[in-house]
Image 1: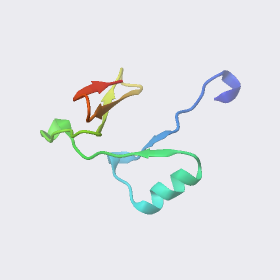
Image 2: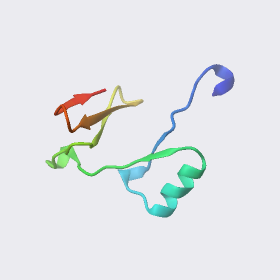
Image 3: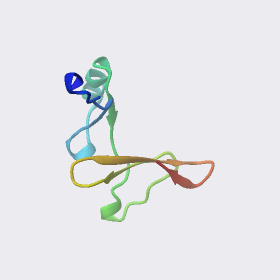
Image 4: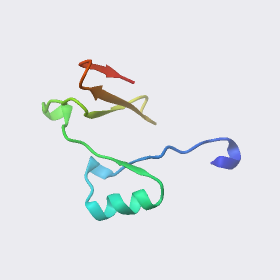
Length: 76
């Protein structure tokens, strides 16, 4: 990837957005940040202040949004 000018993301999304402490620590040792979920919008669960929303961009990538508590708005 690097040879072709592509820079990989530091974020790692585990299958189902579920992972344990051991997996999270292992990812961190590789310099990666594990991204999980505290709400599934498709299941009617609500996002809270500080939640990270994972939204499919075009089927090939994810767009990340963070809900900030002080402004009550979503920022990309």
